[in-house]
Image (cartoon, rainbow, N blue to C red; front, side, top):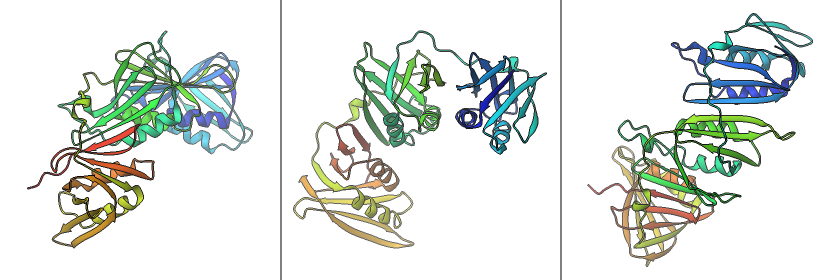
Length: 372
């Protein structure tokens, strides 16, 4: 292999793939990245066996070839170079790196040992607005928790139907759904459960991409692709295994009727809950009294070691008075995920599910702390 490539482009490629490579004593090859030529591109690949990534960058190819090198070490070397153009050349699994001021040799690994990353075949392309996808995943990414008994709820549920993608996450104590409207109408319905780690990798890899990215689905694999701006060729192709199993029918737990509704200012309410959390006890309890006639919401918390907190905020309230308690961490997470300045807080029973609902595109359900 012999080629020249702009340092700026090479660093972008390394930043993309470095998220996937991993240190594993039993399989040291997983800490490497595979560098190889493909037509007019340098192709860099990395995998941790659960997910994989391929990046393509335009380069001036003089000789074809490939080599594996430690991904983190390679990243540090390239970042340290000063010139705009870098030359890469291989000889007997040694990668020679050169610019005008430096000449380096990096010990490589036999590229034939590098694991095979699955390739996407002729699958239906699903374009998704990249910024909206990453923003939506960020709202719900921390809700799932690892569960050996129920692995299906330890990931993010994707449901594609017509021109709508629904993203859902739950940990049995809370649940959130975010809708994304697609630019195309699909001929089929699709659903999948994406591992939480894969969702975080998608945010990290594609978070700065503009326009749309393409999804391709198989029963046990997902492929996410972004295209180069200068020509119709893939720039990044990410793939991940999916979680097997059937996601719970979460629609059944969404309350259809409510006894009380409070309309709240996000920042004011969030500020008061954060202060109340400082006085919360061992079970992270914050109590709310929703008082319709007074048109206010009381916020209370107490801790035997620190004291008591009580505040109130004005609110437009409909329905019955209600006293209800929540885990302040779950409540803060839900409020913080709201983009709008105001939202509706909907209540069923003192021990029933409540919903934060800022818009038709997003809701956050949380269960209260039961009275002892």
